[in-house]
Length: 248
Image (cartoon, rainbow, N blue to C red):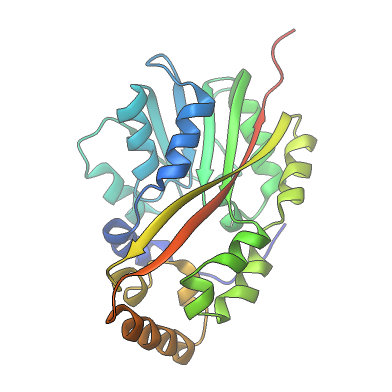
């Protein structure tokens, strides 16, 4: 079990709703690998304001459910007209019947989960036989390569390396829960940063955990560089896949 600095995600909900969007590479990978149909049921764990759950429901016609411990995050999620179900709860305590989901996934959430072994046991229980789980996260290499967060706010690097679990650890927990076919796929999406808003408003949790002066120094340097034009980079994620064994 892991201890981490406390952040109130109720207090971050408005910033997340304004600035956080789906990652095109992640969404493409979830659609490609899971092969969802209108008969499929999907659970997003740590859904926040619900971007991915809504996107999958719209793209595949599936039934989507989003789980998050923050009431404020879910309030933003439920403000959208797209059909999805929103449930307040913890990743370690999935209050769903056994074998009901065709895909369980999380995006940039597993480092917030306190008992990861329990989460994977719960996920394995609630997956249908033969169906899949995907943990979208950052590896050590990805954290070091972040053009903006790591480049302009270097104080986030050691902090993030400490709070993100290693990919090998995730696979160990998944295997211990009985999940099979473990595989890691890295996805990328080039970007041009044209607004400093997400960093000014600290729409990334790590910016709340570095000293104020370090955040201000990075923000000032980013503003100077953006005055000369967009800051370019590549956003990367590691998609850690597994599946519940097929019925025998």
